[in-house]
Length: 451
Figure 1 (cartoon, helix red, strand yellow):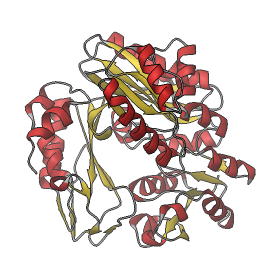
Figure 2: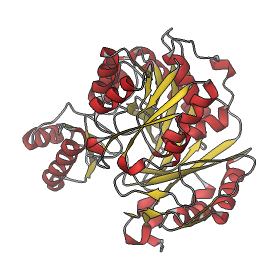
Figure 3: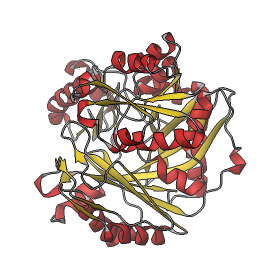
């Protein structure tokens, strides 16, 4: 593996370029017309412009991406996250053209990416999934399924994708019609498939996920778990590793469930297995498998010392995972803040523009994953994530305190960001004193927050 095409942009493209450099591999970056002078473009060994700013004509075009890989004589392709990273069609196109896809096979991606198929697989190996329904394609089917469940509140979810798209809480029968139309329409728009399903909604839940690595030799390793309960509209804002406030017995069962599911899927590559924990009953249910590297992978790297991207590359080369499960030792606590170019006071509207100042402190246990610099442009065409601030320390309390210092001393001008919001969350007594649930941010914190 000598040349890797990176089919992504922003901070994850910079991250993959760094891993390629460390592995002694040349990096080829595809860019849209809006990203020709991005930091990733400046760092890559070669840059290929594949289309205009519109994602549908550039980053979401499997045909253009694969053709760019062929033209640049790349022997492998890394999809990052988002865009085409979970599209089996891209995997198939790579396979047909002799390009190694750094990720699972198209078949495994379909099995793990379809929530209903993944749920069935989880159930087959004894992992609890809740009493969810089969796929629902019409309102009549949804009404009949809800009557059989008889367990309001319920949650409507898209079958074909994640990221919170297509998710709607249904409090009673009177909400079902509007909720079904909203979820199905959003699912169709986001994933090209309007199929949804219903499952009981857990009122007080924590979002816990397990980072996995699996190779083609049948080895599966977990890198511990992350807590991603700080969410707004199902979008993660702060992530931590490891989880706190859960019994060792429960955490052990969650980790074991994730490994067993990866083994059942015969998974190869990096993946994340996500669960909801019912904090009142100390039970958990399976949510989904993400067949790619996650935005929040740095917190797992910080507490284990494992470079997940480099392991992805090695696994794609056919090598074994470079460490045993016994080698994985969770040290300290890491916390990640997603910094978005958004105007919080205006309802979290995107805030594109030119960065006129970018000054972020560095120090021991501090990691900044970003594509920002003085003069960088935040384009209006893509996701608003501009950076990830990660802090690592011996304890959760110390990690929070370190992150507060980083946020306080960061100076970003030219666009609005979520830095002040992150600071307010971390300074909140509830967040610091105890693990929060998935609804705390929206139901409790944001109701009293003034940007």
